[in-house]
Image 1: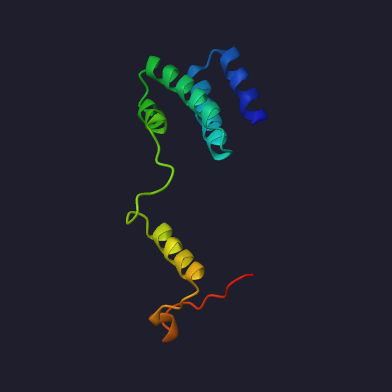
Image 2: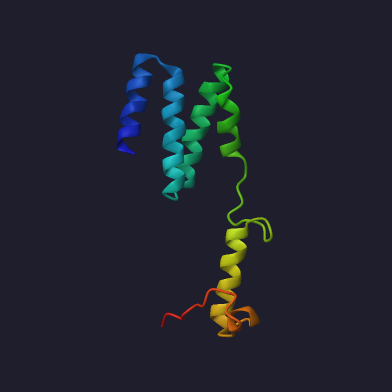
Length: 112
């Protein structure tokens, strides 16, 4: 993050608003990945303001990042999450589904 902050300061000082906004967008992405929602929102908001002033099409992408986010996918919309939830229920219950008994499902071992 330090490199992004340094680059942001350089582009701002050079008077290069597009690259300043680009760096702010990446900085926001990094904050978001690190779990710092407030800092991510602030960086994206600043980037959006610059891109809007420039009337740049990237403003739409940054605007989408600021839209309310779901913390978990809606059930039935993400096959990977749905599969993981099903496997969690199997592990918690300790019951083997019929497909596993027939060898049609990956056999799971409980880690104790």
